[in-house]
Length: 288
Length: 188
Image (cartoon, rainbow over all chains, first blue to last red):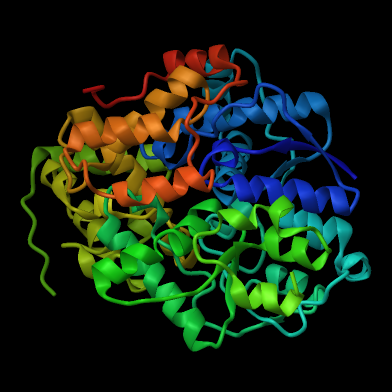
């Protein structure tokens, strides 16, 4: 299994643990991720809130590079995944946009590179059976709230990730590692991440509502596959105390961190020391 | 609820611009309000999504560009995912943002357009986002110097905030894209 890998800007800043845990899990499972040379920013929300052609062109620039490498492009940041899939959707559904993107890039792009989230690779290409065999330490019934957020799921005709109202892909991964996913109503809700710096009041209230739901469902931790969600749920627990007077102690990890621990990878190799809320219960359960 | 709008000459053109930019047909909305029910910020804004559509249908003019949902929208796409007529409301919001930037009327709370410009400035310079510079420039622009500063030491210590600018990107490619698309919004 070999893929072109697009880390995304946060991989070297606010989400180093996302990147580290992705690479560590890939290595443990024999998945080859070859980083795209010279990759550039996907444009993120700043680009699509500014100009549609700019957004499609910035994301398409990386897809052109991936196409030259051959095979699928694997992304581990849900936001980059969404922007890249949107670029594919734009150029395949609008000849006018395809022309504009070609003019901006100086080369044509046909939207043909398959964009895959690393969780999709784990669930579909590796598969639960092989994953189960690779598990060295069972999650042993650890209660996990699988949290999807927006970018993986919506718009469904663009991302095609899973059922947009009741996805189960992450739960299937957790089950393979011996975890027990809680049934909870917050898994497709928005964490507010897009406004985290500009309207922190709005964003923190959204994230707190999600933690509240996970806690009420009896979760020991939340797992995410998005750096915006992870940061909102982990780092911003400090703000929840300040802004809405609620104190939480809910670990929010990347799914690759929790899976990695069950594959026997040391916490440090998965960037677990970078988490703001230490996942004590997770460490106790897995004896790490 | 009764919706009152000021019918203006700019109304028809705003509706046409939004329909063209977002690639939607606003006449297919029959006000089922699923978009507003699912919207995570509907309760915080003056007009929820379905009402914005109605106002556009009725010919609201440029005063609609001041409505707070334009820059409070999280782009979560719940509205679009649940619309029975597949109206891309998040796309409508992006279109209203683009028109606002074009006409220079955007002065919303928290100033997201400024944040977006500062973010894109770093992308233009380095080919990738540079959080620390973007944060500093945004703070300079808004004067919100103390907000979030208490988290910075822990983030730096845990390696969750890059100190040095990003390297390794094909900067020329990105410069070319910005030059070709000339995104709107003043750089001040």
